[in-house]
Image (cartoon, one colour):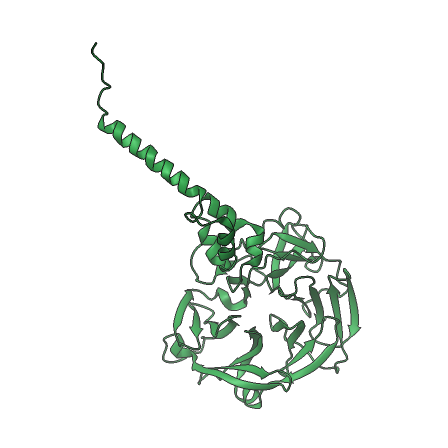
Length: 382
């Protein structure tokens, strides 16, 4: 009896088999996120990876997507500067200046309740927003909302007792190292004699006498730093006054004499757990000086760095219509950010003296550093 043989496989059939075999191998590999490494150690590794790297790792495979999106992994992941929010603008720019924004600046989770809203002060990964329910509202009839763009959770605050005006400003105080509470300060800029403060502990506003002398005024804007549980505010002296979370003014820190005599455009920030101040030289010198408060108790400033701004921007002289501004310092590195408010925004490493272009516009003028925070909001919210 003659046995029949199967016809030989055609080249097309062989390619199809190879394709299925390769696909099967890929599917099997996807079941293990990193070869044979158990999930437990892999989670421990990922929990030590910065948030920006976690976002990139989501593209590796579906199991990696699940691991990198897990709230527990994100909470334990060390966070650092990811980009910048623009004050009173729904815009966000990544630290690299490239790619789609890591955070949706339109905050779509707020759009379900509010028609118009703008980010205000950003602190510790939370953002204080002004929100209106009507499309054509009155400017001073807004709700204050504290939101977390990373978790899309938010809390609407009770109506602030201070009547809103151009002479009032709200500031957010939040420390991700102590995520159990936040505070919001509402201040009159012209007469700093009272402090109205909202505490998430009590859920209400309280107004206290600041104990400060009449005539002390604040410049407003973003000239503030929340450090070690205390709000540091620039005055027009210029000096720095500190206000605790109970609304009490604790002390005044004076700027170095040679800073106030020779420089202009003084600002403050915080990096590596210390208060920093920087200032620009006069129109002709165009010098930047960066100071750090090495000894906080005695309020002794130390000159950290000086550099010619024109050299950083590759220019030989300053034109009459050119203005430069240092708008931020990296929270974990000796890295500062500057803009000419028109054509170029750069980062400058004070250690290596390297310059990198991160933007080709002047939009960074009112940019605020943003560090993701995945802690839950300290009181019931949405």
